[in-house]
Image 1 (cartoon, helix red, strand yellow):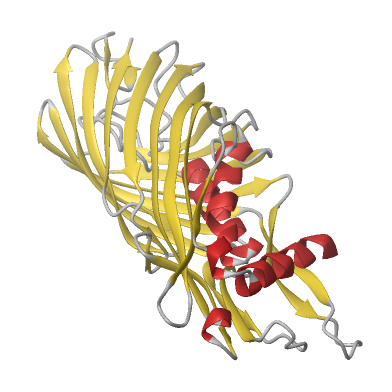
Image 2 (tube, helix red, strand yellow):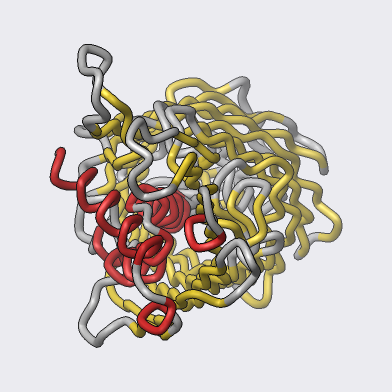
Length: 417
């Protein structure tokens, strides 16, 4: 751990003390790097390892914990005792991201495909264009440096899932996320006179499988008899397997288990739903957040400090409106709270030894504070033909303390048979 702190100080010393003829040059990332390594190469020019760790963590947490979509299909069927025919349980087609208590029905299978495309604009309150990474103040212009970066981070995700009704009240399924994540950026360092000192450019793309999800839902309470379905209560479980690459922001490299309670009600054109759940992680994701002197020592002896993100609270609520027999209008409000750390902010320290001419150093780091993500999701589902549905939604952040896109479109198809 002390080796990493020493590396940070060595990089800082090199940036501060090297001749201008050496520093005024571009550094390009090399082929074959993971996206995590690409972020590190882009940010280490400012003399701080924690800034790269903070950006990499925020990227991984956003791309791998984004909502997959609702479990069950838009068509739920039930045997009408009066006619002996299978009829739809509800006149609406269900939410796209939050959940309702209704299940598919015995032996009914639904398959889904959702595609989303995000171009991330902000990291908390910071814009990714010309974002400050680190700065130092010192006894001379050469020791007073400011590092900024302009990042373009994008992700495209195709989630393909299938759900089968084992009984009238039990659904099981699996979801396969296919992901493409791209990181591209330019980092620049200028001295106290505003002169260009050093820059780095780099880019990388990774495509492949994300963390697979295994799904189950059990409806244990029905609010009444008859059709349309009056609603009820259900419990759902989602297990995420570590099948995606954590080095390329397609997975977290750990097992996750989400257990949620679902509720939905209403027989008319307007049907509300709500759910709340807790996602347990079998281990945390820890990153370096800075270095501080040991209190027992008089000289500056750096010690690594870290933060760890582990577990997540999720909840959602919304409304379904039967605008027409083949059209359902939707609105959902989703909340995610990542626990323990991961929020980004600036941290500063003052070296006890001023041999480098640096009097203070400030860096963007991951803080020991969790991340809150609140998202508004308007949308619609349209019955194209038979049991085939087309869905169109938008993920709009209301309050997001992590990496986020200001508007993410999501399109999907849903077929039940």
